[in-house]
Length: 395
Image 1 (tube, rainbow, N blue to C red):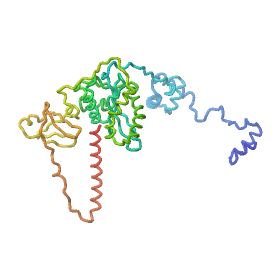
Image 2 (cartoon, rainbow, N blue to C red):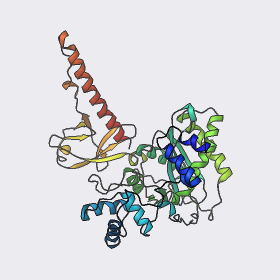
Image 3 (cartoon, rainbow, N blue to C red):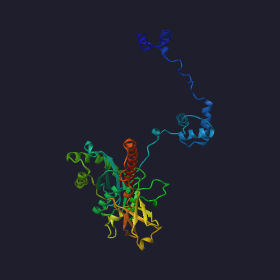
Image 4 (cartoon, helix red, strand yellow):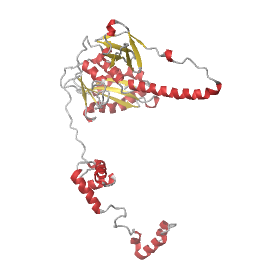
């Protein structure tokens, strides 16, 4: 009884609880509402109607979609969690935690080196607290688990993959295929995209090099490179720390030494000793292949627009024939722009917009505050446009 006094002290129901305990003993602490339906409980007939509609029309729907359709088509407004509970009780829905795990059957390794190269980028704090996080592009051979290439970059952008892949080709030659995820660098993921030819810039470069590009349906499918990420996040991070490396430039210079040590420890022997890499052909110009290309229409005044800039083609009889036609604009990794037709670069000049810039206006002292406010607003807008341009070029 003393314990009851301690628990109910200060409660407005304390007297009633003490009375019930004195009359019934410990059973007096049990709530009188136990075993009674809640006042907020949904009527049984309404629940049966909703469940009947779900069985008849929405048996293969998820709870959220079924909830929406009951409200839109039948005027039954129920919470999605109520629908979820009803469907689980009726066996129409299995909670995610109760579903059997998806089975990913292992596949055999490819037979020889260079037949299939798994590529992926891994974002991580490779230099720990000594430098910001960055991306490591990893190239792993499927047959041997050998690391074929490592390159530290700022992001998983098209131009960074261009640079890493070019270094791979110059060192090893052309593999039969690259195996990647479905990132936008490798695959056009927007089915409603209206621009382009349906292929990414990286896919176009692989096509010109006669290298097959394959996208995996899951991360488990490219498990070799995924497991390599985990090993690198342990071993490579510690190696960089021991050597005092804190920059991407120094890390990239160290990669050849690290790759040789890694492969000596972990590489497997392929079933077939044949090396499937092929040498680069003489007509495969990597400078031209690893460029960003877009088509632009030549205006009647022999101008083309690209990346918010206006380019003036030289006024020659040959160029006048190009008016109204589409030509290719090559954007090189170093920022150079080059219009080309049938493999020939066209001379051009950049339209000078400096003449349109106000060189400085005389402002009355009383208006200086308003003018500075306008300058700040216009400057912020320009900064956002520049940031958008840089972001678009790095994707």
